[in-house]
Amino acid sequence: MKLIKNLRILLIDDDEWIRDSMSMYFEDEGCYLQTLRSAEDALEALINESFDIIIADYKLPGIDGMEFFKKADELNSEAVKILITAYGSKELFAKALNMGIHDCIEKPFTSETIEDSLKRLLNVDR
Image (cartoon, rainbow, N blue to C red; front, side, top):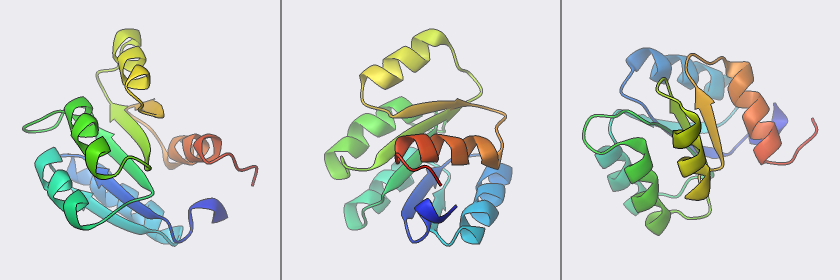
């Protein structure tokens, strides 16, 4: 998927399997990917780096994904923001979209699900 080649992506998820599998996917796509297991670590990373795309899990140790995105907006407001969760509900997704998160993806998901979301969000027909 050429549209994400060379983009800087931050993934926050406490599930090692998701971090590892997404690392393989994004590496194959030619992206720079940083994976972290907590929102606090991710906020620290955002102080020194900016990212084109930020993908965060809703349920994280410490602050959750929604609170993370509120704080992250102050540091990297231009990033495409995607919330992933196994605890999705219409109310949660509506709240996320209302606060400026660009997409919500339910777990379990596939690399195709992420790819479809990014194509839609980056407005590319490739």
